Image 1 (tube, one colour):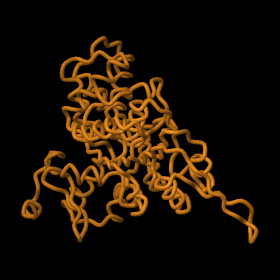
Image 2 (cartoon, helix red, strand yellow):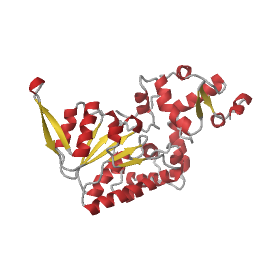
Image 3 (tube, rainbow, N blue to C red):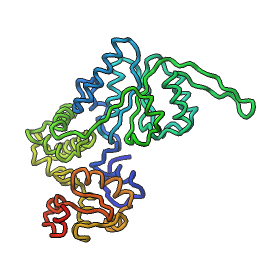
Image 4 (tube, helix red, strand yellow):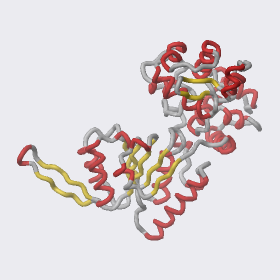
Length: 354
């Protein structure tokens, strides 16, 4: 699906998320793919310094013992580099990687077929592992711990189970919702890595690196302007860089200045805090129509012309994380920061809440 600037009402939160420039979900195909922007070694991975140190020790120990490493779980919000890290692990170990996802595995037999075709030391990367069917999860438990799978042959009373021994392999699971993983599956992972949102300084380095790959000549301060609007997410940073590149090409710019970045991204309705049209619409509805709140989710969704699920799952997490919005038992309340961002003065009643 191609990127779109249509911010109209969508049927689901997932569809709305896929249409937003500041979405952390992967959307569309670009002339320069994400694969080309991804580093291939751990030293080239920008950000997450503690996680990198832990993972480096983990891989070095496995190489010295000359055995495949324990299974790895990568957890965190979308767009922070889980898939990139999985590719790096396979590259660092110099082994092949097999890629699938939880939704792609419809039946336990699908997973059994993949597992039985793995070679010794091979990496199996399962994206969105929390969405595996229950039967496939149970099969994966045994395969990860005992390195065997039981294949059912026949149907009905005459059916029999044939155990197949598997070579030692490494499962790398990626999830945006670690809490949805059943405890038995989570316990099979020997190393769990939690990815955090990136500070602006690390995003600036990442944007500079991607700009070199894309052939974009950024002036001093241009990467900083994009980092401010990237919501702490590398995927969004790279997406904004591509749109700035488009602006530079159309306007025949040799060097992209900070003012050019501001002008280019204002066209896509992305402000200095990374808020887009939908985010501003939500804040405006709370502040101007409900005097700062509290306001119920359904009323808020109706006011901005979106589904409740869209507002709750697409807009609110970032607005809450950045301190523009708080959730209370009575409803959503805009903070002083939200009022100031809209250029308004909070009422006395709102000021007393904070």
